[in-house]
Length: 294
Image (cartoon, rainbow, N blue to C red; front, side, top):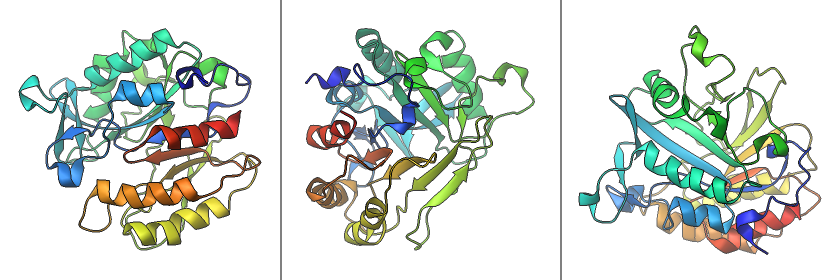
């Protein structure tokens, strides 16, 4: 199977997030400052999309009218040679646009988070809209509702985790699915949280992202019980993270444990798991999730 086009044969009338979709946490953090603690991937955006990844978790910080790609306070670069420059959102988007031009049957879900020091800085969306979206609206699905797959084919679907200026008329129906009420799951409480988006179609999303646990505890207390509890789709969408920042050994060490546990875990085609975000995602993991849909 060509995993660059795995959505090609899917029923386009079904809502996009009703499918089981592999994703990458901090998708661009391959070449990054303080890599021991900040590097989250060893493939670039094009490689991820070609292996079947369809959900990208992107973190940014405003820099004048542009958006720098970051992982918390750490800057992301375009190459291992930092002299080739820091990564800005346009670098990432060019790869997404090119992939979708070549594979118009596909849809890519872009989760957009302001990771600057001031998390309430509305400038991050202003920059996204005026610098990156305004002349490329045909490449995006920007409404605050869940699209059917056919509506999203060939496009980036925006999940927005930052606040916006609600009074700005330019943003009306063009600011993505509103996840700005997302609560950080940074406490030692293993249960997921329900996010009500207050979108016109009353989207509700279960978010499993308890990222402070060490990897073994993360799997045993959070991830495995959540996977075990899955049922058929019940009209609530799922964003589930299989990454963690717990411990002192960094994302790569944590990912080796969590990804191995996931690889051994038996998924059920009759159940709905939603989007699953990984650090150091590999082709075998992407295929395992994709094949639930086929």
